[in-house]
Amino acid sequence: MAAADDEQSAGHRVVCHLDRLLAERRMTLTELAERAGVTVVNLSVLKNDRARAVRFSTLTAICDVLRCQPGDLFSVAPPGPAEVPDPPGHPSLDGIR
Image 1 (tube, rainbow, N blue to C red):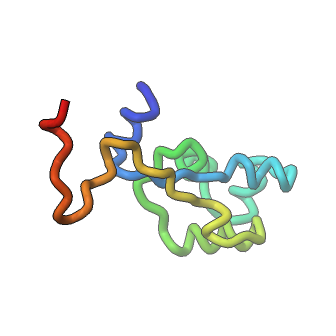
Image 2 (image 1 turned 45 degrees about the vertical axis):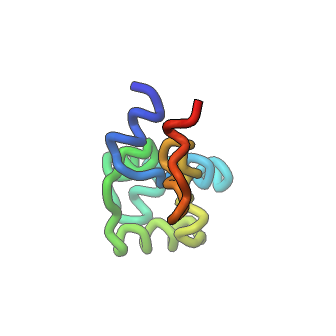
């Protein structure tokens, strides 16, 4: 499945940077799971951008252990050209060839 397909099926462009944060801290997913009290499976889903939601309590626990802010853990990818709506009052370019 292509990245664009993943984006559309998930309905969001939120990207998780857990792998980078773990690497910077020389910490394993298992160690984070133990210290944060979150299952390795849940962290893996988050790390691989397959999560649809994150509880604030889970986010808080991860940020406490990694000593980071939610904005360090997540970012929003820029929209693709097809996802950017025309500004209000702007004529559609669909008919122009």
